[in-house]
Length: 544
Image (cartoon, rainbow, N blue to C red):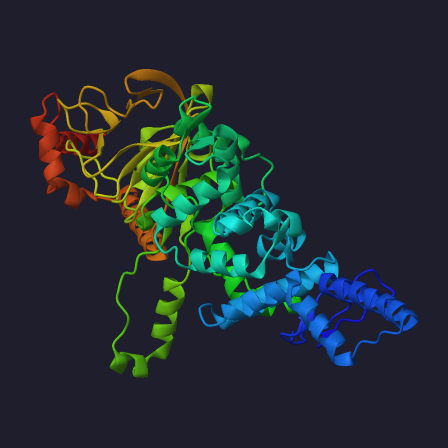
């Protein structure tokens, strides 16, 4: 048996990289042992005074019985008994957290402070609720005769066995639906309902754990509150099943980043916690904004970008592979091509600003000039009066047509004051500026009597479900690959060259006589005979 020595410091100093033996005795067990030895010595004095002696073998047996009945010995036994069912890395992490709790908080088990600091990255919103949920779940699994005993022994203290069981359960949550159901239960204190404050804590914790590095002066409260307002419809509390159904429909990947971070810590924590290092996971699902300064902080706030990444199909958030991986023969000839393909597959989508009415002017012609010929998915953000904001998501390139167009991934969203998906599906977008006899402007929606969005050709008025609002500004961002942007820039370069050629047309007299445009002008009427005019001019010049 090894006993941890106590130094002058109030904490116990341990080597960070040292392996923890299974027979380490904690402070609680050591205190019981010292109390027992003190009682044994007092009993020996009494026995000697009375002429009675006890053998060393009886004392050793009683000491072992005391250790076997202590709480720390039971915790270590439970931890070791689950070695076969849990990964080795998770078992090592559990032992490290027990040592950290013993050294920092002088507690035997996994303390709440250590759980918040090392598992939840000091995120109190997530850490407190997850810690109490694991403790409540472990108490429910206790035998009926032992129910309530852990409250007296472990106050705000998590047993290693409960931590292992909850970690294994987290690893088993594979689908988005299962993850969402788990975290709704974590943030809900009631069994069946969840309040407005608890829903906001869930959304805010999920946003914090997404680890967006973009700094902004705008607060995310209004944007995140739009999700809560849309989900609860003004109620104080709703059922957990309804919230699960609503989130699955409007932002199904809400808790994906939060769950990914927790499982990442449970996987690599046995390496990073002792050395105080970080192994950050590559995020390929959160788009990166190119030239973010060109957009207002309200329009594309990082919280709004994160919400869109939770709601939109992956065609908008992940780069599309134009070609498959090269064949093995071509890989041997050009390995750089294979490396470029692999890097592109692991890189997030870069959203590129195509049009901004504040910078390029609020005009339908300027919109067509900057957005057309971009062969990729786009996002149009429309800002109206009273702080209303909408988003039109097109998975195909924009075109002028008298028919509705769009693929299966088209979406129409209301961003504020309530965040929700209004409509989705194919043939959702109508944009016409040239065909006479058909409605002009932009229309979004499948219901002909009540379109989701209607924008006039003058870009002055927008209607949401036939309710008019004054248009303030709108902008368009490209969500395609870099090749789509390069193709658009090449197309614009060709258009400029053709325009320059048209401006520099020089026709001499011989070419003008045989040019068809000359005869068209004569047939238009009221035009002089240029040949006769030229002859009179020559005769007048000769006579003079």
